[in-house]
Length: 389
Image 1 (tube, rainbow, N blue to C red):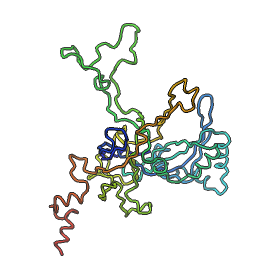
Image 2 (image 1 turned 90 degrees about the vertical axis):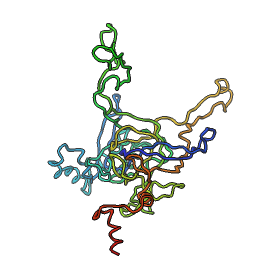
Image 3 (image 1 turned 180 degrees about the vertical axis):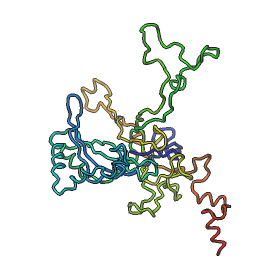
Image 4 (image 1 turned 120 degrees about the vertical axis):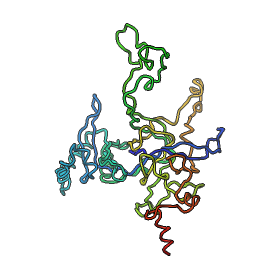
């Protein structure tokens, strides 16, 4: 689960042999999704029944963060003193029979095992304090292996780089931007009626025949527009960047600076956050995912990434007669977009407020010269220090 920060553009060299733009530079729009590590806090087991999946049992970790506990209580102010106390006390016992019994029941009866994870909302500078919770299905191996693997991840951080990789195709699931109650012209794009129409022209003239005596679903009507659950498929990951505060060994260090927006051809020491920050979002200091194009939703909205459900490889027979007589009468067609390896040449970090001219603050100060800041401000402090010398 990621958080939408905003958009920028990149320049890259196309690597598609046979294409007219092969080995040529193109500029493309990309979306930046901030993705701090998720934390595994529980397991839930499902039994397959003729009427679908049925929850058998759930097991939780001993320690849950405050942001995760807030999900379970309607009034946190009244509940925080005793929140999750009894379960935590039982889980802390040296010989905790309850947890072991539930794990054994999962191994014996469940066919589907899912890991319960939550986002580390504190690492993102939003006003929200409540984490977002999600179930992530564990595949591969038998039920016992799934349970053991999931149990080992309790209270561990799962970075986005351990799940996805660059050049991979993913699906983006989110809620679209809400636009409220809209009429038929805006909502469905129907044509306006002639100017002289009586009682309004932004309408549907005829909403159906006398019989059948009801309005069909296919007739455009006014109603809610936007704020819908949507999935956009086949988004290509261009880059997975590490946190700004990552040292040379890959460990988190609040004093370190990791220039996570540099490329092989653009060696400027800069972070992915543009000058002035992303509009209506702010700074991106955690790990981020760069995805080609746009994704549904407004800034700060949760965007769930999943492995692509569209097969990137297709299987074709050349001829039915040949297929019966020859073993080499078929071929595989692989999506060229999925195969292409992306090499970024430039990532734009200029200001998104207006027409940005400069990529970094240093570049701006070199071009414009010393700033005439008001005395006493932080910007005027270096100039005052030089005068004192």
